[in-house]
Image (cartoon, rainbow, N blue to C red; front, side, top):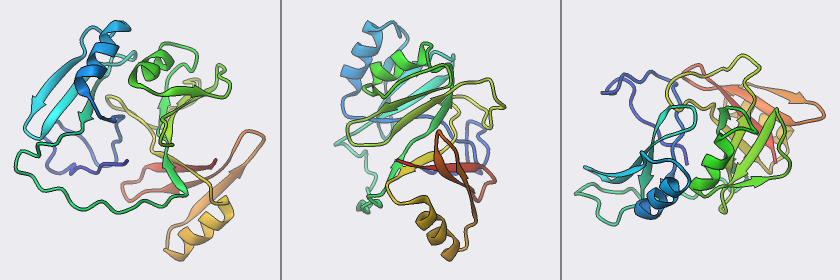
Length: 199
């Protein structure tokens, strides 16, 4: 999922367009036990005013918050979910050594490696689809901030069809095709690039 928060009212000084890695977890206590067993000793469950969260420091030294699914809504109302477009999956891009400690961290979170990993790129997926792409840092990293990721998606729709659909909605996209990937890049309303790769 993609969760939008107000930058204008952020108590933590977040800026418009900043995108941070997080996740929704079914059982925060089990996840904390698994993280601690794999060396992430500072992992802990925090009871927030909206549910239980897992706080943990990732291998890059960034403090991450993983939101627990809660039956007790603390008086808040949940809007009825809208079914997402089945052609799209959220796939954030985290800039870290694909062969380094970030892969085992993602595995401790419950993701699994897909395909081959090399010094440039690795993919980690969740059972429901989507996942996290790890990119090498030997390029200019387009994002910054704690837990920073570049928002990305994978699509089963042909990229040319997606670009035409975006253009009809007034959104311009560029297309890149090479031996590694076919993808569209768009600029979001906050000025950040979003990449959408063919699955």
